[in-house]
Image (tube, rainbow, N blue to C red; front, top):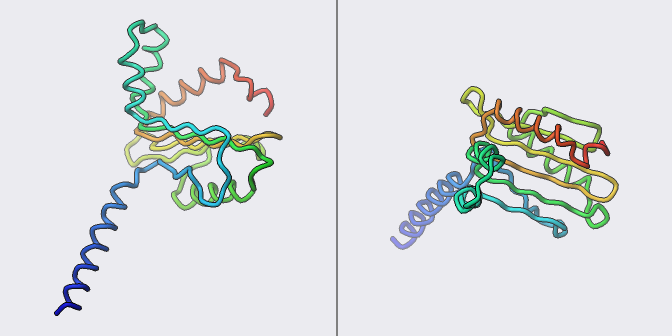
Length: 174
């Protein structure tokens, strides 16, 4: 009888723990803390709570903040990792992310040599993207960013246009 109880208890635990693990999986969110890698030189972890706090706590809300608030509403979280290329095996890390993106059926949107790429995970709902994954590498650093949520593709295009218009420094190196 004790064996039957133990087996039943084990099966129940496995059933419920696998259900919990599935509930924690968020479409578009990629695990950025990889085992067996060196610590990133820069690590950013932002979630919806941060964006809500930033927008609501600013008493002197400028037009620019209101403009970008409509983009922040779509985002559930942002993870960024930047690594010193001398401290990591950048090929293994790049291969790991490529495999994750392929397995989850992300679509390559932009790829410029092995320096810059943008991949999207489209939702079943039309016009919605569940995730954006960006990789950038230069001679000194390798960076990865994962943005996830229910992102309106049209608004995403407008935002990317604004970023390109602002001519970020790294775009000149690509």
